[in-house]
Image (tube, rainbow, N blue to C red; front, top):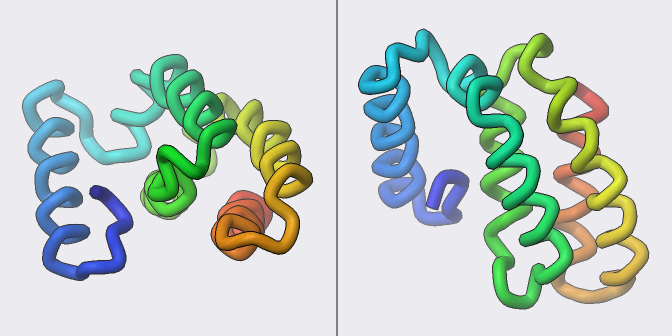
Length: 109
């Protein structure tokens, strides 16, 4: 629920991720993401193919990117291809804008 439109839910999810970071001795979310990049990338790319089933995928990825350092982003570059493919599949539907916002976050980071 990280990135939820409901601030309280999003904050609770963020606190949970921070707790996971502490438990696994990760200094921050970016480092935690880097350690788990293969799992995150695989799951996110798969979920991007099925946005009707997993519509929060774009928000989750956006929040992870925003809280990551530039050093932890290169493994996520594989997701860019999947984002572009998803944009092509979801032209003019409810997923178009979240996908474009996600691509923008990647490009600005």
